[in-house]
Image 1 (cartoon, rainbow, N blue to C red):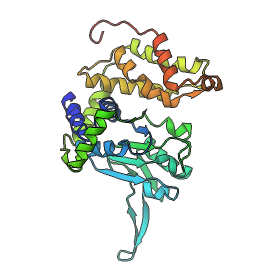
Image 2: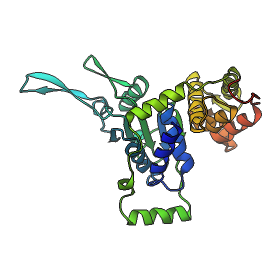
Image 3: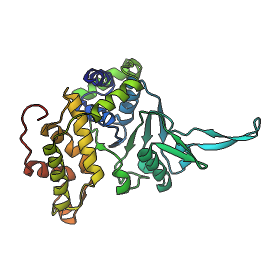
Image 4: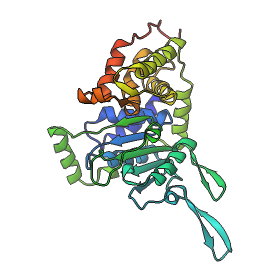
Amino acid sequence: MQGIMESVLNEVRKVVTGKDDIILKVMLAITARGHILIDDIPGVGKTTMAMGFARAMGCKCNRIQFTPDVMPSDIMGFSAYNPKTQEFEYRAGAAMCNLLLADEINRTSSKTQSALLEVMEEKKVSVDGQTRMLPQPFTVIATQNPVGSIGTMQLPESQLDRFMIKLSMGYPDREQEINILKARAAGNPLDKIEQAADEYRILALQSQAENVYIHDAIYDYIVRLVQATRQHELIELGVSPRGALAVAAMAKAHAVYEDRDYCIPADVKAVFCDVVCHRLVLSSRALREMLTQNDIAMQILGSTAAPRLKKGKA
């Protein structure tokens, strides 16, 4: 299964230059059955990367551009009257797919955000009293512009907690940007992506990750890290139990990428910051000292002793 992950990553690298670490983390979150939030300024490749993953995985992808007038029915679907059959028929919304690209999620209303939250958590839609399961696998890759941009609103903590990881693309360096210009001059890079997997292989990959072995000492390590966020003097709101589950799931996915069927402390360290940072609410003192969530998460990682395990599952 490691070969499937690497094949997908190689295809996505054709359209996203110099962001191998970001691409890998998105692949890990998909493997862990999680959802991804990408927070960055417009034009750095957030949407292109999401479209690249959809094509490389061979999954059905829908895209919805969030604006203030987007309604919950645009996501979940609605019932429409068919005069030929004289019956109401269900018309699928954007969520009826394997990969939902939710563009600029923080530009829409709280009511529509709540509808997306239900879809992400339950992986089903309820319309007119009928519940319909979403296709599997199902992943949301949401993008948002930084708070303070025109027309943006702060996502509530309850919705942020539903995203397994939050990433930032960042500007490319000089050489990377030159390569981007050259690639675009030769045509649309997305057209060069070949299908490297399908929904059945992705489901098998997710099942393999779920079956990765975690030693009790690793579970204890995860809990100690999470509890440290709740007790830290510079953090007002620490990581929830859902966040702890996300750390464990991402660590399992990282073990699969490293071609192991068991977790080691390095797997937890590799994913911890990306999983927990967007779940932390800093104190006013931390903000005055110009500390970030990542700064404090790194402090916690450095001050929490990792277990020493014998080679193998032990």
